[in-house]
Length: 158
Image (cartoon, rainbow, N blue to C red; front, side, top):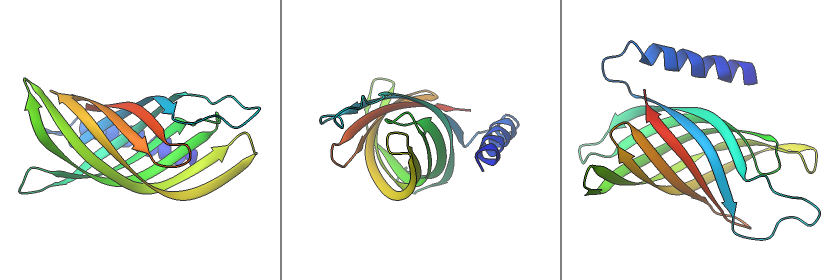
C-alpha cells in the first residue's frame, strides 16, 4: 500500500508538469511543537519530515478553494503517518505580495505508534493559517487533542 501511494504521488507530480496551469502542490512536512508534557520515559520526535501531494478540486465564486491531499510523514513517536484529507481554504487578507489564508482539513490518518507497537486509524480535523507568496505557502496548523500540537509544513505549486 505504501508503495502504491508513493507511485501515485510521483505520477501526479509528473502529470502536472505537462499542465498549463497546475492544480497540484507538493507538501513538505517539517516540524511539530507539542503543547504538553511527553509520555514518561519517551522523547517526542518533533522533526516530522515527509512529503505529500495536494490537488485543487474546485474554486468557489468567492475565491475559496476546495482541495484533496495525501501526506506521508514521520510522526511524533518516529512511526509513519499517512493522512488522506479534504479541505477548504480562503484568502482573507493581503499584506504586500503575501496572501494570508485560513483553512480547515478533515481526513483519515493511519498512525504507527512506535512506542506501543500499534497501528491505528483515526478521523481528524485541523485548522490552519497559511502565508502564500507566489507559488510557495508556509502553513501553520493546529491538531487539537491532549496535548495539542502545532505543526509547520510548506506547499509548493507545481
